[in-house]
Length: 256
Ligand SMILES: NS(=O)(=O)c1ccc(O)c(NC(=O)NCCCCO)c1
Ligand SMILES: [Zn+2]
Image 1: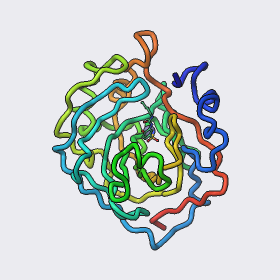
Image 2 (image 1 turned 180 degrees about the vertical axis):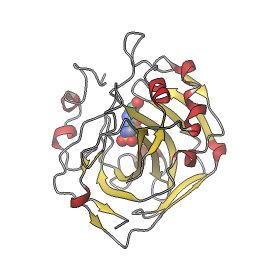
Image 3 (image 1 turned 30 degrees about the vertical axis):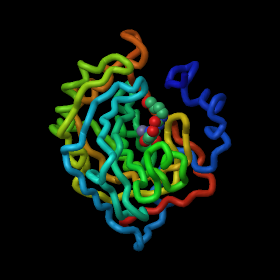
């Protein structure tokens, strides 16, 4: 199956997922602040997150992912560019082999060491995630850059559990994790219409990329790389897709 290696990585994905090449709204993209447009009609993001509905921590074989119980309205994102209420389903990360790269979005030429994706689906219009994932307004993903600087206590609970999920497909119970602890103080954002950044690359994501990164220590960053893609000689790293053509898209921001 698809992956991030030389034989099954992003340059090969079009062979099984033609939208990779043929799509009009693929992600990630380069964000060039000078070419974005301030939109005063954009609302602030409102996140109502309670910690209780975290469920599990999984090595998906392409990332590390925390899944949430999304059968009820417990962790809801509204406002911003969104119409309706979007329910948090999971968050996961993308990162590099070295600290100088690893994010999927690139901001004014800067690649960050990693990128957090908080994945929400439109529970007002669709019955479940799978249905929403196929709709043009089905998903809303908040992207948060990670910059190596000082230690991030909020990440520690997850990172200290990674030893238990080294192998692809492994999963452990992971409860009471408040995702809002992973957000920076300032919620200024860029927003544009895009896609999943992994196969099946559905063009169903309203992207909300925060301008301000969160920080973590280099030891914490190293911890991500102790996970395995397929086996002990295959460390999970460089699990990011490079930027895709902007084509006929506008990038808006909620700040001047
Ligand atoms: N990176 S993203 O755009 O935020 C993103 C958000 C939600 C997703 O469902 C996917 N992709 C996905 O689920 N692919 C199927 C199997 C993956 C196993 O790891 C990517
Ligand atoms: Zn992602």
